[in-house]
Length: 111
Length: 116
Figure 1 (tube, rainbow over the protein chains, first blue to last red):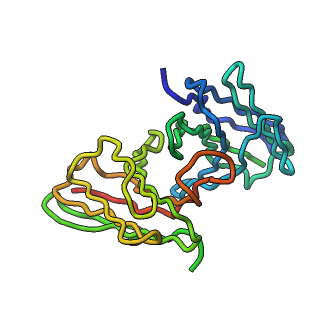
Figure 2 (figure 1 turned 90 degrees about the vertical axis):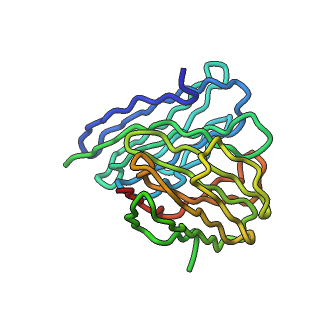
Protein backbone atom coordinates (compact mmCIF):
# COMPACT_ATOMS: atom_id res chain seq x y z
CA UNK A 1 0.00 0.00 0.00
CA UNK A 2 1.30 3.47 -0.88
CA UNK A 3 1.97 5.79 2.04
CA UNK A 4 -0.13 8.56 0.49
CA UNK A 5 -2.78 7.72 -2.09
CA UNK A 6 -4.65 10.09 -4.35
CA UNK A 7 -7.00 9.68 -7.28
CA UNK A 8 -4.79 10.72 -10.24
CA UNK A 9 -7.70 12.18 -12.19
CA UNK A 10 -7.82 14.11 -14.38
CA UNK A 11 -10.82 15.99 -13.11
CA UNK A 12 -12.27 18.02 -15.99
CA UNK A 13 -14.70 20.64 -14.70
CA UNK A 14 -16.30 23.82 -16.07
CA UNK A 15 -15.55 27.23 -14.62
CA UNK A 16 -17.62 27.88 -11.52
CA UNK A 17 -17.87 24.22 -10.53
CA UNK A 18 -17.13 22.85 -7.10
CA UNK A 19 -14.60 20.03 -7.04
CA UNK A 20 -13.34 17.83 -4.20
CA UNK A 21 -10.12 15.86 -3.95
CA UNK A 22 -9.53 13.06 -1.51
CA UNK A 23 -6.36 11.61 -0.08
CA UNK A 24 -5.65 8.72 2.30
CA UNK A 25 -2.48 8.07 4.25
CA UNK A 26 -1.22 4.85 5.81
CA UNK A 27 0.80 6.01 8.83
CA UNK A 28 -1.50 6.75 11.73
CA UNK A 29 1.37 8.52 13.53
CA UNK A 30 1.59 11.25 10.88
CA UNK A 31 1.20 14.67 12.41
CA UNK A 32 1.32 17.37 9.76
CA UNK A 33 -0.67 17.57 6.56
CA UNK A 34 -0.50 19.88 3.58
CA UNK A 35 -1.86 20.50 0.13
CA UNK A 36 0.63 21.68 -2.46
CA UNK A 37 -0.15 22.82 -5.98
CA UNK A 38 2.14 22.07 -8.91
CA UNK A 39 1.73 23.68 -12.31
CA UNK A 40 3.03 21.90 -15.39
CA UNK A 41 6.86 21.82 -15.39
CA UNK A 42 7.03 24.03 -12.30
CA UNK A 43 7.91 23.46 -8.66
CA UNK A 44 5.32 22.51 -6.00
CA UNK A 45 3.96 25.49 -4.09
CA UNK A 46 2.30 25.32 -0.71
CA UNK A 47 -1.43 25.84 -1.09
CA UNK A 48 -2.47 25.35 2.51
CA UNK A 49 -1.63 23.49 5.68
CA UNK A 50 -4.38 21.25 7.03
CA UNK A 51 -5.39 21.71 10.64
CA UNK A 52 -7.22 19.15 12.76
CA UNK A 53 -10.27 21.39 12.98
CA UNK A 54 -10.33 21.97 9.24
CA UNK A 55 -9.51 25.29 7.67
CA UNK A 56 -10.64 27.56 4.89
CA UNK A 57 -8.75 30.00 2.71
CA UNK A 58 -11.02 31.85 0.31
CA UNK A 59 -12.43 29.33 -2.14
CA UNK A 60 -10.37 26.48 -0.70
CA UNK A 61 -11.38 24.30 2.26
CA UNK A 62 -9.26 21.51 3.72
CA UNK A 63 -10.50 18.83 6.09
CA UNK A 64 -8.68 16.17 8.10
CA UNK A 65 -10.20 13.00 9.49
CA UNK A 66 -7.57 11.31 11.66
CA UNK A 67 -9.78 8.33 12.51
CA UNK A 68 -10.18 7.46 8.83
CA UNK A 69 -6.69 8.75 7.89
CA UNK A 70 -8.28 10.87 5.22
CA UNK A 71 -7.65 14.41 3.97
CA UNK A 72 -9.79 16.39 1.56
CA UNK A 73 -9.55 19.59 -0.44
CA UNK A 74 -12.64 21.39 -1.70
CA UNK A 75 -12.39 24.09 -4.35
CA UNK A 76 -15.46 26.25 -4.87
CA UNK A 77 -16.21 28.46 -7.89
CA UNK A 78 -13.36 26.97 -9.94
CA UNK A 79 -11.29 29.35 -12.06
CA UNK A 80 -9.29 28.57 -15.19
CA UNK A 81 -6.19 29.43 -13.16
CA UNK A 82 -6.94 26.58 -10.74
CA UNK A 83 -5.87 24.09 -13.42
CA UNK A 84 -2.88 22.28 -11.94
CA UNK A 85 -1.88 19.11 -10.13
CA UNK A 86 -2.76 19.06 -6.44
CA UNK A 87 -0.38 17.14 -4.19
CA UNK A 88 -1.44 15.67 -0.87
CA UNK A 89 1.53 15.74 1.53
CA UNK A 90 1.94 14.09 4.92
CA UNK A 91 4.81 14.32 7.37
CA UNK A 92 6.41 11.07 8.47
CA UNK A 93 6.40 9.91 12.05
CA UNK A 94 10.17 10.17 12.26
CA UNK A 95 12.12 12.77 14.20
CA UNK A 96 12.41 15.34 11.45
CA UNK A 97 10.48 17.07 8.73
CA UNK A 98 10.28 14.23 6.21
CA UNK A 99 7.41 14.82 3.85
CA UNK A 100 5.71 12.01 1.95
CA UNK A 101 4.11 13.19 -1.28
CA UNK A 102 1.17 11.69 -3.07
CA UNK A 103 1.40 11.33 -6.83
CA UNK A 104 -1.06 14.17 -7.28
CA UNK A 105 -4.53 14.76 -8.70
CA UNK A 106 -4.73 16.66 -11.94
CA UNK A 107 -7.42 19.32 -12.33
CA UNK A 108 -8.38 20.88 -15.65
CA UNK A 109 -10.89 23.74 -15.52
CA UNK A 110 -12.42 24.62 -18.89
CA UNK A 111 -14.47 27.64 -20.02
CA UNK B 1 16.79 37.36 -5.09
CA UNK B 2 14.00 35.98 -2.98
CA UNK B 3 12.88 32.51 -1.95
CA UNK B 4 14.77 29.47 -3.19
CA UNK B 5 16.81 29.65 -6.39
CA UNK B 6 18.38 26.83 -8.38
CA UNK B 7 20.92 26.76 -11.19
CA UNK B 8 21.10 25.64 -13.87
CA UNK B 9 17.43 25.38 -14.80
CA UNK B 10 18.17 22.87 -17.55
CA UNK B 11 21.10 20.49 -17.91
CA UNK B 12 21.97 17.89 -20.52
CA UNK B 13 24.90 15.64 -19.75
CA UNK B 14 26.53 12.47 -20.95
CA UNK B 15 27.00 9.46 -18.72
CA UNK B 16 30.71 10.17 -18.29
CA UNK B 17 30.32 13.85 -17.39
CA UNK B 18 30.63 15.45 -13.97
CA UNK B 19 28.31 18.34 -13.18
CA UNK B 20 26.91 20.11 -10.14
CA UNK B 21 23.50 21.50 -9.28
CA UNK B 22 23.32 24.56 -7.04
CA UNK B 23 20.60 25.69 -4.67
CA UNK B 24 20.47 28.87 -2.62
CA UNK B 25 17.79 29.92 -0.17
CA UNK B 26 17.22 33.52 0.87
CA UNK B 27 14.69 32.77 3.60
CA UNK B 28 16.97 32.42 6.60
CA UNK B 29 16.02 28.76 6.94
CA UNK B 30 18.14 26.14 8.69
CA UNK B 31 17.09 22.99 6.84
CA UNK B 32 17.54 22.14 3.17
CA UNK B 33 16.43 19.18 1.07
CA UNK B 34 17.05 17.55 -2.32
CA UNK B 35 14.15 15.81 -4.08
CA UNK B 36 13.89 13.90 -7.35
CA UNK B 37 10.72 14.02 -9.44
CA UNK B 38 10.53 11.53 -12.29
CA UNK B 39 7.74 11.55 -14.85
CA UNK B 40 4.41 10.38 -13.42
CA UNK B 41 5.97 9.51 -10.02
CA UNK B 42 5.68 11.24 -6.65
CA UNK B 43 8.50 13.39 -5.36
CA UNK B 44 11.22 11.28 -3.77
CA UNK B 45 13.30 12.68 -0.94
CA UNK B 46 17.02 12.24 -1.55
CA UNK B 47 18.93 14.14 1.14
CA UNK B 48 18.19 16.30 4.17
CA UNK B 49 20.54 18.81 5.79
CA UNK B 50 20.08 20.64 9.06
CA UNK B 51 22.58 23.40 9.89
CA UNK B 52 24.99 21.98 7.32
CA UNK B 53 24.83 18.46 8.75
CA UNK B 54 23.34 15.65 6.70
CA UNK B 55 20.55 13.95 8.61
CA UNK B 56 19.15 11.74 5.88
CA UNK B 57 20.46 9.85 2.91
CA UNK B 58 17.42 8.13 1.50
CA UNK B 59 19.26 5.18 -0.08
CA UNK B 60 20.58 7.34 -2.87
CA UNK B 61 23.29 5.87 -5.16
CA UNK B 62 26.79 7.22 -4.63
CA UNK B 63 26.84 8.79 -8.10
CA UNK B 64 24.85 11.59 -6.37
CA UNK B 65 26.97 13.46 -3.83
CA UNK B 66 25.48 16.33 -1.80
CA UNK B 67 27.38 19.19 -0.22
CA UNK B 68 26.12 21.84 2.18
CA UNK B 69 28.85 24.43 2.89
CA UNK B 70 26.50 26.67 4.90
CA UNK B 71 22.83 26.89 5.77
CA UNK B 72 22.03 28.97 2.67
CA UNK B 73 23.68 26.84 0.01
CA UNK B 74 23.23 23.25 -1.12
CA UNK B 75 24.93 21.44 -3.97
CA UNK B 76 24.33 18.13 -5.69
CA UNK B 77 27.40 16.78 -7.45
CA UNK B 78 26.69 14.35 -10.27
CA UNK B 79 29.03 11.83 -11.88
CA UNK B 80 28.63 8.79 -14.12
CA UNK B 81 24.86 9.13 -14.19
CA UNK B 82 22.50 6.79 -16.01
CA UNK B 83 19.71 7.71 -18.44
CA UNK B 84 17.15 6.69 -15.79
CA UNK B 85 18.48 9.53 -13.61
CA UNK B 86 16.85 11.99 -15.99
CA UNK B 87 14.31 13.88 -13.89
CA UNK B 88 13.44 17.20 -12.28
CA UNK B 89 15.68 17.80 -9.25
CA UNK B 90 14.10 20.07 -6.70
CA UNK B 91 15.67 21.82 -3.75
CA UNK B 92 13.58 22.90 -0.77
CA UNK B 93 14.12 24.62 2.55
CA UNK B 94 12.27 24.93 5.84
CA UNK B 95 12.75 26.97 8.98
CA UNK B 96 13.87 24.03 11.09
CA UNK B 97 14.32 20.30 10.78
CA UNK B 98 11.46 19.44 13.13
CA UNK B 99 7.97 18.50 12.14
CA UNK B 100 4.85 20.47 12.59
CA UNK B 101 2.89 23.31 11.15
CA UNK B 102 4.86 26.50 10.72
CA UNK B 103 7.71 24.42 9.37
CA UNK B 104 6.50 24.04 5.81
CA UNK B 105 8.93 23.39 3.00
CA UNK B 106 9.42 25.87 0.16
CA UNK B 107 10.71 24.71 -3.18
CA UNK B 108 13.05 26.13 -5.78
CA UNK B 109 12.13 26.02 -9.49
CA UNK B 110 14.14 22.85 -10.06
CA UNK B 111 16.79 21.69 -12.51
CA UNK B 112 15.50 19.60 -15.38
CA UNK B 113 18.24 17.05 -16.01
CA UNK B 114 18.58 14.90 -19.10
CA UNK B 115 21.24 12.17 -19.16
CA UNK B 116 22.14 10.94 -22.62
